[in-house]
Length: 201
Image 1 (cartoon, rainbow, N blue to C red):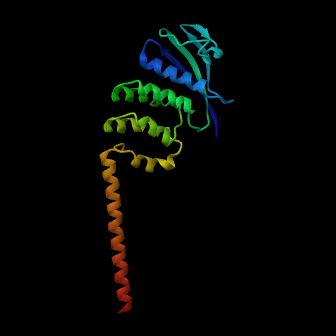
Image 2: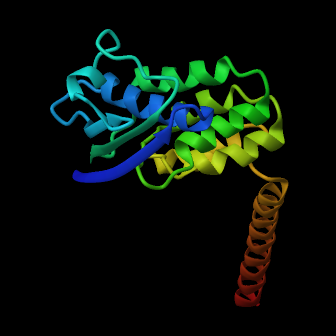
Image 3: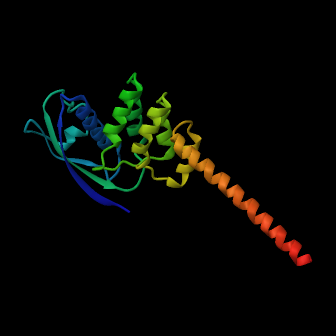
């Protein structure tokens, strides 16, 4: 299933958080090699046009460090995971960032937005979370990534496979469910044993 989505963006390139998002969206264009490649349309910096062939080439155009970038991002959403090269772009960005709080900010900036959806697999999410040392920060970051998962059938096993990713309350709830299930099974077995004993009498 596919559908086209358009989103108008305006970024102040002198602001680091806005520049990062612009870099990610440009990388998404350059890393996708298919007829359904995402597009930048009506691109301009401070009102000066930038052509799409320039957007697609680092040799032809470098993202300025100053100015107002404006473009319409057109995506053809196929529910396919992002390319490995785009994932590596984010991983490198995180790896170059020394503190967990700053890494978390990058994840929120890129994946916290609801206007354009980027799809991830559980293994991709794990590779992103592996860069976080602090359990609490990891648990705060995970919800921003989980909403992009395409293989939700693997998410439960994936979550419990990540040390400290789930909140303690969620782990306690799971433990209580297991405990209640075992108690119910014991009651059922006891009731069946009683029924069999009565039948013999």
